[in-house]
Length: 259
Image 1 (cartoon, rainbow, N blue to C red):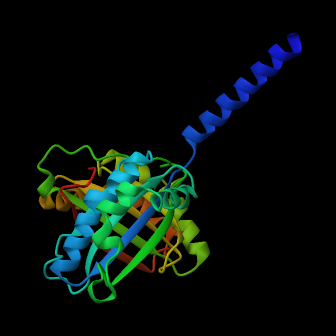
Image 2: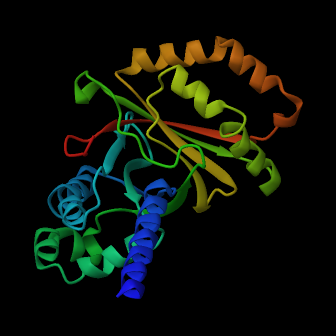
């Protein structure tokens, strides 16, 4: 009996350790970008995401899915919708995708998108970017915003580097260098910081910050640029020329986005 008792204690301790490790582990993110050309395609995507895809993800315990559109979508040549999905493990989306193929509710409510004919496709192209959360920002944070949802600005940035070594240097600058701490101190409301594991613009990292409105966004960046800590950090010899290209994308949340 004593052996069984101690075996049970060991198993409980092992499972508790595994649970604690999972809680402390770094998340993964799937960022899907829909490129579309007109209002009809936009409506197909919106209806699918709102009525079929997000509810199906929620049923599979994937919460806090962000859906965003370019602030200048109406005038942009390349119109886009961004869908940010947080994942607890790297293969979670593959598992859920298999379940969706058997989900009658999902297949029925998403029928117009899923069964769209060749002559009426819902998008021009679709791309998926897989990211792993930074070491010192392992979990997604929901924005602490109080203003109208329609006025909110989400800023997605992609920093490309000339080599893998320079890319790792920029990731270190965010983590051990203190850039993440600087964003926290200045209340940039960061949603995530991620290392791109698979994408078309590698090597690169991506992160997203959030603001009450456009004026709030501009004021934050003005403060950031003049902050003594940023001036000190950006002048350090070891962090020079570690970004070769920066893409700055201003977004607003859709009315059906989870935040």
